[in-house]
Amino acid sequence: MFIIIAEVLLFIAFLLLYRLMFYLSRAKSRVISSWMNAIWVPLFALLSFTYVITAIGVSPWRAHFAPVLALLHELGLDDIKTIKKQDLELFSSAAKMFSGAVYTFLMSWLSVTVLRKFENDFNHSDVTRTSEYQSAMEVCFLFLRALVYLIATFVLMQTLDLRHLANSLFATGAVGALLVSFAARDSLSNIFGGVMILLDRPFKVGDYISSPDRNIEGTVERIGWRVTIVRTPAKRSKYIPNCLFTTVSIENLSRMSNRRINFNVGVRYEDLKKVATICRDIEALFDGVDFIDKRCGNFCTFNSLGDFSVNLYINLYTKPQSFREYNKSIEYILHEVVRIVRANHADFPFPTTTLDNSALVKQLKRRISD
Image (tube, rainbow, N blue to C red; front, side, top):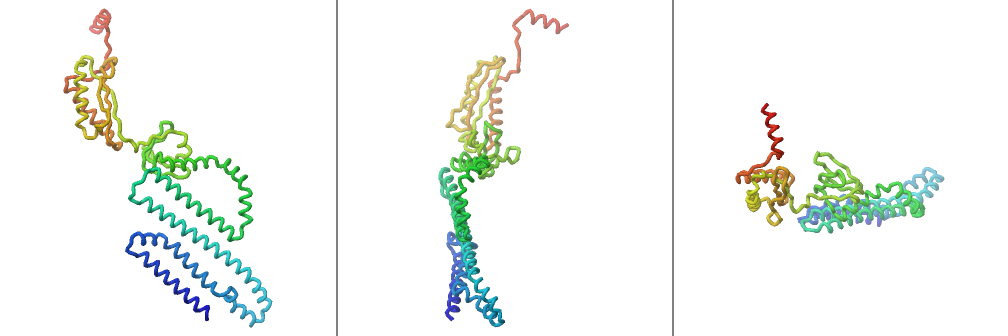
C-alpha cells in the first residue's frame, strides 16, 4: 500500500513540474519564455528519466520480479528460480550503471544547451563591446563546452567501471601526446592559428582582407578551427589553413578609415605658366565634393618634369566607401580634372620627340617631300 501511495505522489509531482515548465515556456516575460523554450527538450528528458528511475526505486529491485519468481515456483522450476535470483544482483548492478550513464548524458546535454543559450544571448545583445572582449568571450564559451565534454567522458568511464581504461589513458598520455603531436603537427598548428585569430581578431566574418605576401584576397565567410573560408572576387571559395595567418601579413580593407586616390596628370610644356592656376582650381574642387574627407591632407602639386609633359601629382582621401563607390569616385575626379585643365586653355600632351639638329631636320624634310 505504501508503495502505491508513493508512486502516486511521484506521478503527481511529475505532472506539477511538467505544468510548471509548460507555464514558464508561455510566460509573458520574454527572458523566461526564451530560456524555457531553449532548454525544454533536455530538461523534460531529464525530468522524465528521473521520474522513471525514482518510481522504480521506491520498491526494491526484487519486488518487480516477484510475480515472475512466484510463477516459477508454481511451475516447479526451482532450479531456474535459483538461477534467476542470482542474476537479479547482476541485473541490479547493470541497471545502476545504465541509469548513471544516462544521467551523465542528460546532464551534459542540459549543460551544453545552457551554455549555447548564454552564448546566443551574448552574441545577439545590443550592448556595444570591444573586439578584444568579444574574442575573449568566444574562447571562454568554447573552453566551457570542451570542459563539459571532458568531465562527462571521465564520469562515464567511472560509471561504466572503466577505471582501468582511464588509468591506461593517463599512463600512456605522454607517449600518445608525443606521437599525436608529431603526426598531427600541421593540424595542431592550424588549431593554434585559429585560436590566435579568435584572440587577436585581425579580421572577422564579413571583412574584406588581402595579403601582399600570398595570393589571398576576398571576403571572410567562416573562421573554423582548422581553416578559414574566403570568398574571392571571382566568387570562388578559398580554404586557407589557419597556420598561414601566423606567418603572413594581412590587410583588413574593411577597417580602412579612408580610401586613397592618387595619380599623376601631365600637361604640355607650353602650358607651364598655367600649372599653378590648375593646381589651385583642382584643390578648390576638393572642398566642394561630399565624398572627400576634408580632414585629410588633400592636395594637388607640381611634381616633376617629364620627357614631354609637366607632371602634376594629385592626392586625396575619400570617406569610407564600398569598392564600387570608390571606383565611381575615381571616375568623377578624373572627369573634373580634365574639365579644369581645358577650362584653363591647357591640354594633355602626346608622346613627342624633338630633334635639335637643324641640318638633320632639313634632310629628313627633303626626303619626305621627295
